[in-house]
Length: 190
Figure 1 (cartoon, helix red, strand yellow):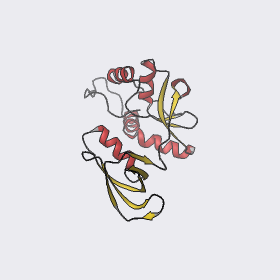
Figure 2 (tube, helix red, strand yellow; figure 1 turned 180 degrees about the vertical axis):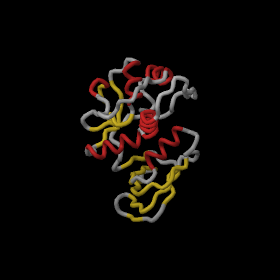
Figure 3 (spheres, helix red, strand yellow; figure 1 turned 45 degrees about the vertical axis):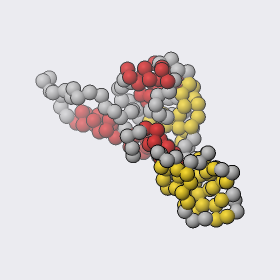
Figure 4 (cartoon, one colour; figure 1 turned 90 degrees about the vertical axis):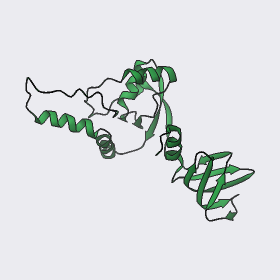
């Protein structure tokens, strides 16, 4: 990954995906391996040109359009009041002020919370709460179709550090003069 969030998003959206690239009146379809950000280029493999000519690997400089043919993400615009926390989500949290300000200013929480088709939040509880506090009625979310077992596993992976801290706290006896962690908030999103 780079230090540029736009480039990182483009890499995640395109690398390893089957895509259509349109440039100078020609249409290429194939598997994207790399995106060269500064040159605006794409490297593709197992390419078909204009639905007829089969090529191997190609380097396409400055395409007009790059489109994932079978996108893996399904992003939808949802009413924040229709989203509910994951049933096992009992973690106490407050979204950071910076996240709330960002939601208000940009009308977006910087990334897509992940929810099930029934509106159950798997990952993104802080982002949805920040959007709600900022007064947003709707927010884009990534919708996934998973079983209850898969949802529970994804929730556990997404909240591993918070769940570990909670279970560690439950196993330790409380002491009046115990030292508290003052290092600041976790960057993990509950």
